[in-house]
Length: 94
Image (cartoon, rainbow, N blue to C red; front, side):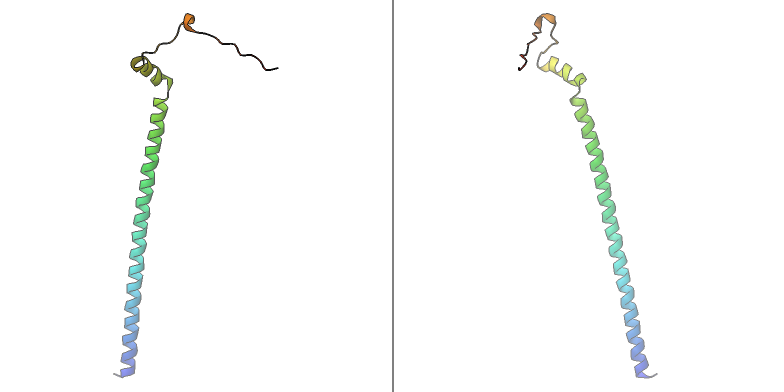
């Protein structure tokens, strides 16, 4: 076999194997990046669900149905009757 042909074949095979290695490396990096993206999307999804749950909890805790019993129990407050109410008149600016 001619040494020039053998040299070209060797270089061609080395370039081919290098190309395959590069493609494999690039594909593995792409798959790793997609896995990270998937993980970030799931974290965002969990964070959104927690936000919704916190919003619901805020709505419950600030609702009149929750505040009135808490005020009656812990602060010993009650709903005033007519004799306890005072209506203040405001002067109208001229």
